[in-house]
Amino acid sequence: MSEYQPGVCNIGRDERRKRRTLGAVSFLAAAAYVGVVLGTGRPAGLLLGSFPLLFGGFVGVVQDRMGFCAGFGALARYDLSGSGGGAGSVAEEEAVKQDRIKAFQVVAVAAAAAVLATMAVYGVGAAL
Image 1 (cartoon, rainbow, N blue to C red):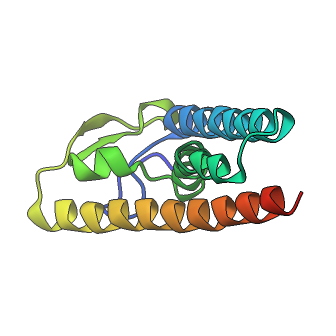
Image 2: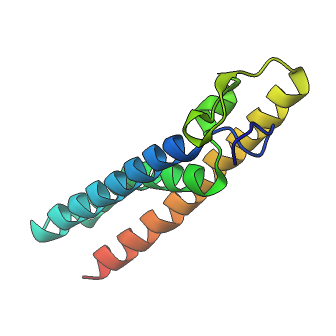
Image 3: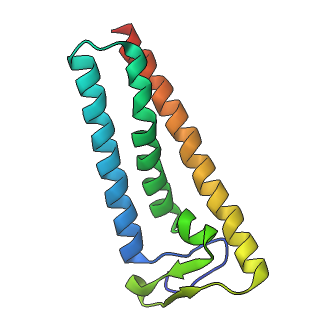
């Protein structure tokens, strides 16, 4: 998609790739953290520390899949420059409102997924 759509699309191909990459790196960091906790016999409660890394991973993946950056949405910005569109600020009040609602949805979906994943990591790790 190469044009800004309020509450639907505010990032282009290049920005999506950045978020996908950062999400993958965050998931790898979470896996490494869990591996260290389990591999060194640390208390299972430390597995809860994987939450911020999992949250970061899910934020990146959700933003990529939705084509919508929560940060840009909250700041009333868009960047479609990697997809043939432009970059800039959102001035229309209704568009800003739609973007902020979508930004909240992105963060909420990522947080819910991270909570579930953290619970799964803790449950499996505590059972080992």
